[in-house]
Image (cartoon, rainbow, N blue to C red; front, side, top):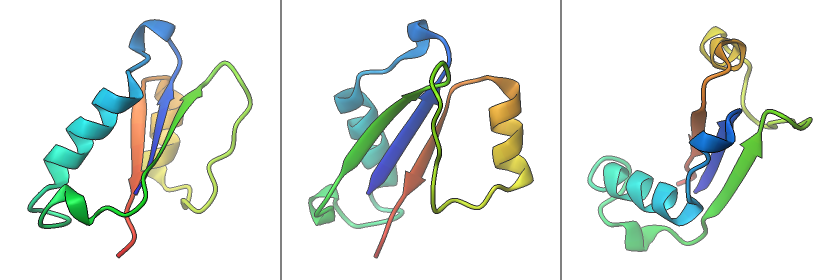
Length: 80
């Protein structure tokens, strides 16, 4: 599992442990039976105030809108 949280306002910076737990709990029973099935987890907090690239995610209109709106958002990638 790879979680990338993109934020612009430092007030919106989330604690990576809390972010991970919330996402893992939400995906339980949907993407996997139990979060104990997750073998590797990577959490990246990205500020818009620095240059960055997100590789391996196609730039869809939805993703472009997220970047244009300057709001915080999360990209979650799962491999099975």
